[in-house]
Length: 185
Image (cartoon, rainbow, N blue to C red; front, side, top):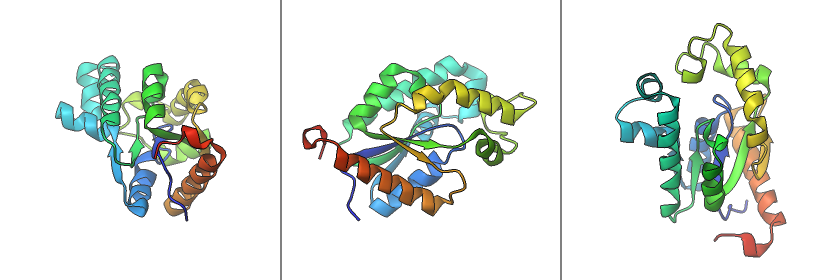
């Protein structure tokens, strides 16, 4: 199998598999894996739920933008998983596009509800009596942003290894279709 020529940026809703698929994808390619939520937690010295609780979502979104802006300084190819709300800011989209190929791990609201279950550690769903409905509403509000990705891979019903193969197939097909002058080697 060919190897991608650009970093792969995994985007999508919480619970779509960005971190899980990203870890396995990075291992398969021998690339570094970066989860922007983990970068934020390390810098802040606290978990995402605590950041939301103590500082609020606007502060978290600023930390997220800083973490994303700091990524292009690295030249090594890598897999990057970004938080579900990262694409709601134009500056984040621009920075991520410069870094690599955006891959939207798409899930239907039904699959999302199944994957999230009780969703105790999801700040945007905390306090919601019907977490599945709240997640579906959130997904609908973000869908247009997610669909701006270079590649869309629907992972409903996929196990992690199958999702990894689907991402690789989609990215390699996308790269073959792009003009060579757009590639970053």
